[in-house]
Image 1 (spheres, rainbow, N blue to C red):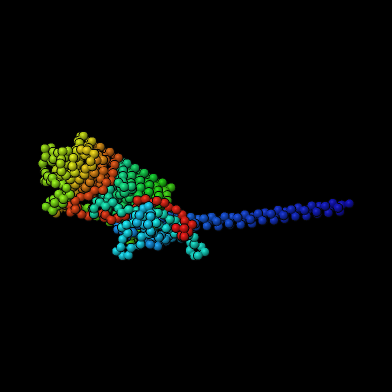
Image 2 (tube, rainbow, N blue to C red; image 1 turned 180 degrees about the vertical axis):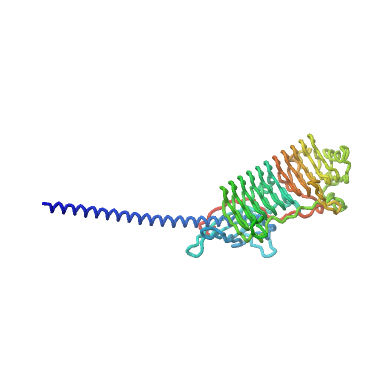
Amino acid sequence: MEAPRQRCGDEQGLVALAMALAVSAVLFLTGLLAFQMASKNQSEASLRRIQAMALDAAEGGLDRAYQSIQSSSTANALPCGTGVLSESLSTSPAKSSYSVSITYYATFPVTTGTLTCPAAGGDLTSAQAASVVSTGTTGTGTAQATSQYMEALVKITPGTTTGSVFDQAIFSNLSMTGSNNPTIYGHNGDDGNLYTNGNVVCGNGFLVQGNVSAAGSFTGTNNCTVEGSVTTVGNISLANHTTIGGNAVSTGSAGCSSPSTQGNITMTDNASVAQSAYAYCSITVGGAATVGHSVVPNDSALSSQVVQTSETFPTVYWPDTAAQEADWTGAGYTKQILNDDNCAASGVYQDIANMSAATAPTLITTTCALSWSGHSSISLNQNLAIFSTGGFSMSNNTTWQSTSSAVRQLFLLVPSIVDSTATTCSSGQPGITFSNNTSFASTLDVLDYTPCTLTISNNSTGYGQVYGGTINATNLFTAHYVPMSLPGGTSTGGGESASYTLIAVVYERQLSSLAAA
């Protein structure tokens, strides 16, 4: 009677074993499926990452094209043709590269066929627009390489022609320091450019509506903002919410041995570069800092790149020869009060005050250190040029204006050469100082020039250009760039008049293939 019970127990064991095997099989198949899905997802994620890297490389190619067009000093130096710009990038986990082709058009909006790339000695002076196509590639080999494509249409125009000398909104020969909310506004878009043959310190809300170029270093802190690009030979250091609207480029020229003062970019504390960062040596991005597109360290091409960091500080001559006096006469300054060295109120100051009723543009030369303060007000009925070997100082609500709505020109000039002798600076003098609500009305375009120190502070405002050996701008200084020039033969050096300026990116778009361009 017990045998059947034994058989029932065996059957139950077999059923349990079968169920266990079935469950194991299901678990195995589920695990295998999960592994296959994970592998597929990993492969797809890897592909997406490679594609994103290729797209970033293509965008980096667009940025380099913009920079190359903008920094071309003559029309025949504009990059033109298929694959005219290319670069291998040190990206990880795979290497990336870009190749850029650029074609030009004679009109904007584009209504004509493409212009022919110039032969040696040719030019593209009629170019008004450019089509830029960039191919970004990540990986190597036919099977592994992935390419992405970007296209842009840009409107370009020859840079503002201001003669062969004065081509910057602000030019400092030795160094430039801006803090406590000074602002440089452009004249035609973002062309309020700042240039120095030394270092730039940009801090505490300093805003530049243009590009910054420095033969030395650039240090940005405390909400410094440059709406264009920053190009230096020395190191670039960005911190404390510094914002660069274009590219950051540190070219270097003397190798990358440590410690190196050239060719490095360091970013921290929420600093940002909207376009790309290029450095001859290293790039360090930390502390929530961001770069919008490509980060390209060890860029050896920068060592030989022609950038806007080689401009000589202009020389301005005291008009002590008949030829120079004739240059001013030819420019319309038919009234000339020369060697007015009576520094009393009845002397040179009265000659300047008489400009409120002047009937002709006037040139005044003096050795007096000219100073105005205490609610002084000077009005000009004609253009006025003042040469002073003693410098200029204005404070406490000094104001200058035109007698009408007609715009007048005012030149405040400390000459760098007097009787063939270079001006010697001592403790910054003879310099120019504007402080405590010194203001120049919008009806006056002013060129300030001294080879010594130029200091502007405390709510001072002006329209025109500022050129100084050393420039310090603080406490709500506001400059509105207006191009100006001196008569031919009265100044030498300075910049070029044939540079190209990128005015606007009309559009950027991703392409499915080169055939879609």
